[in-house]
Length: 88
Image (cartoon, rainbow, N blue to C red; front, side, top):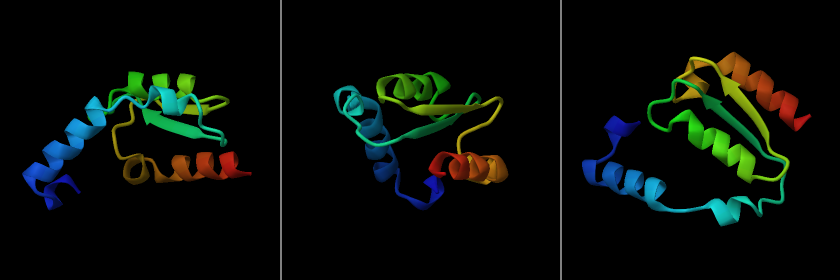
């Protein structure tokens, strides 16, 4: 997907995601939440997934050992099972 956007859009999106502090909002998420993160994600290091899960009240956290960014493409079966388990 990143190759389909302009360099400016990529830089602006990366800057926005890395410089915006959502911690206060995350503490107020009122809905059941599932965070799934791969330990080999180079785009968003795993410590961000762990932090998100700690900040969101009652969050369920699933960590995929050795998994990269883009879990729907690399781990579709496991992700589907985790999503189905979460919603049921």
